[in-house]
Image (tube, rainbow, N blue to C red; front, side):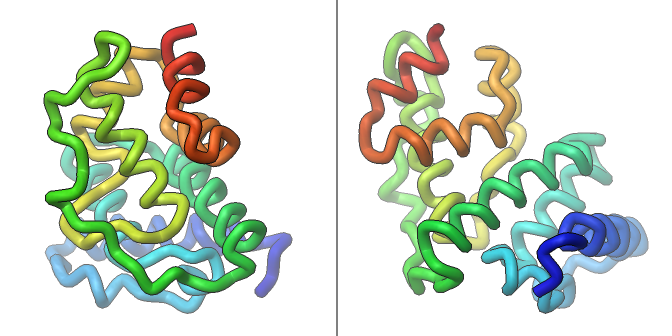
Length: 166
């Protein structure tokens, strides 16, 4: 893997994905590229970001890159470049209206962030989806920063809550 230029290669993939989506390609598997394997990403994750960019003009490439960088770092440092082989189940996520510290969505997005870091997102779940974006804007936290806070907090939800409510 070319560590020094992975971000440039990711930009090329992003541009290609946006073009593919814009021209009607709705087959996430066709967005695959070996770089995704190198950074612990999936074609579905790239597809989701391209889809939302085309439809809603967010998340931006910068946000997609920062989220990918957090996942890549976790994949290489914690997981030593090996996937877990596990996918979380949607029904195991907290409900969308679950709250903690008076913040709806926080319990759900914490678990989504953990799954994103581990590369365990099911195909029908997106970290950085519209609901996540509403939450992150409300608490004024960047989604990539949130990933790193969740990583640093390990299983200590209170550290995450403290960060979000600071």
